[in-house]
Amino acid sequence: MPEMTRYCADCGWKRLFEPRHVIAGSCPDSPDGRCPEWMCTGCGAALLIDVAAGPAEVPQAVPLLPGRRVA
Image 1 (cartoon, rainbow, N blue to C red):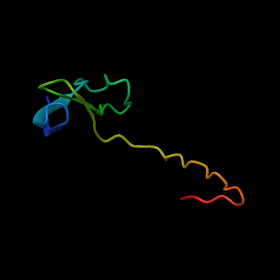
Image 2 (cartoon, rainbow, N blue to C red; image 1 turned 60 degrees about the horizontal axis):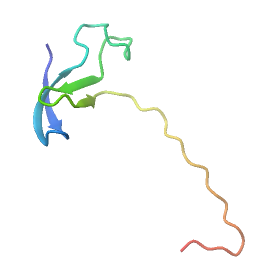
Image 3 (cartoon, rainbow, N blue to C red; image 1 turned 90 degrees about the horizontal axis):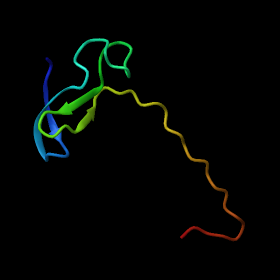
Image 4 (cartoon, one colour; image 1 turned 180 degrees about the horizontal axis):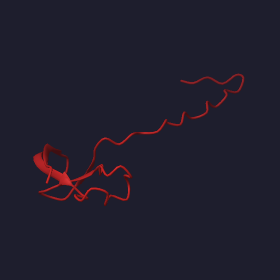
């Protein structure tokens, strides 16, 4: 079973983490079999690893009305 040591924000120190879905191909979130969900062996806190983030949405700029300033 693969393991790694990472900082756990819930525990407050380095702990062992192991994958949530150990059996290859059993992770419903990853068709290639590499589960991105890891769990702290101490408290069970979740950690996502190697998750590709999509493009962030850029909020539309609000036009300023004539005669108004931003402080």
